[in-house]
Image (cartoon, rainbow, N blue to C red):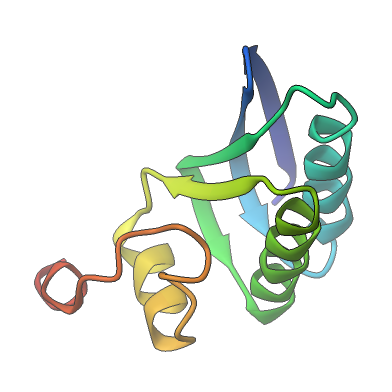
Length: 112
């Protein structure tokens, strides 16, 4: 499956809505979109909206960590929103929910 990304700007916040899968074939698209969002000095927060994300693998998680670091270097914040149960479990199992600005709630993972 492919990945598409819709970008919206709202002052210092850029929302990237991802549709599809983040895997080895699509990680470059995610990284490039995040870096492009940071080209404006006014951007302080990047929201990754995962409402339409159906899959993420380890290469995708590695890319999210790299994106978080790139944003942190610019004194910005990365936040994840609308995680599906599958994506939340993957990030939780990897210990990345808190690092990536998602709620680190074991109860939410266990009950989904």
